Length: 262
Length: 237
Image (cartoon, rainbow over all chains, first blue to last red):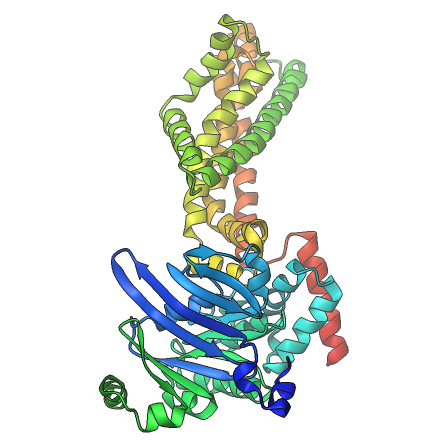
């Protein structure tokens, strides 16, 4: 169901969410990083995940496209059950991942390819004809303000430019949801501004996004829902104004205080 | 000083050079294939692949090439598997340099940042494309210096095939020396000839290394793709 249809019918609660996570548990060796976590992301919504480093935010995000495999979970992504109980249900991981775009903290562009080739690669694999893929890549690079850098290699670009190319690359397969893993954490303030501007535009276009971030003001500005994760559990969640403005939980308050002091 | 009638021996030297080049080409192509397969096997998650590949590499890295040459030519013949000189020579080079190259390739493949594989996974590229479009092209850059050294080293090592009279450059030299009794002069000429092919070869390889490092697209597919991209960008501008 499209977002507008959902809003018109006013059946938000019954609509199939783009991402539905239930009873997600994950440990690395003996250390439990996620403990019975739930997350629901409706179409067109932006959910931000905040919390201390090492608290499990990134692992939670990486479970959505199964870069990280849960120990136990019920996962539904884009209308399909991909994980159930202890079992991987999704038989075609590549197909799932084409519906879920991901932007990494360290950009992870392919350094041996130009910007435009970075954006083309996934499309060609997905069977898009060469010329159409290139056309789309150029259009996406223009959208992130980098058409003039299309033939540059990653090492010739600033961090902000690289991250914007990475966003274009993630958008190239018209994913149903975009995952951002601390997209501005390795950027200087100016580059951060560039990247946040692009993300703001995506938000305005109604892109569904899950955002792990330390940019609390930005999270507050763009997200519809904020989740505070600590010690592998969701401690508190709600509208950002509530979680970030008037947190109910002591640990959330402590985190926000440390954020303001830091 | 020169008393060897070289004009008489030019055809022999020419044949020797050609043979040396053939040994090198076939030996190197074979060693690259074997080395790559071994490297992938050693990096595989399956123990059943990892273990035999590791054993192979350790065994043949620690046996002299000359012993391998004698084993394939004389040794196999004694159990009824008769290889001719050319087959035995190529096989020895492939066996020996395959083991060495697998080490270079393994280091290069594991040297590709893990984030690259993740990004490829996240794009849904699949195993084959991830390897072919993302991991191997980057590993190539890392492997190139070591591989190039190995190629030049292999060319020089073909001279060991003189021990089974493989008709390559060194064998021709020995024939000329025994016919003329002018060892110093003959082997100096042979040494100069080896230098004359090895030096330009290593320089070419260094040049290639620099080109690849600077990101110049070498594959026709990439060239075509970039050409179309350039056209689309001009169209749009």
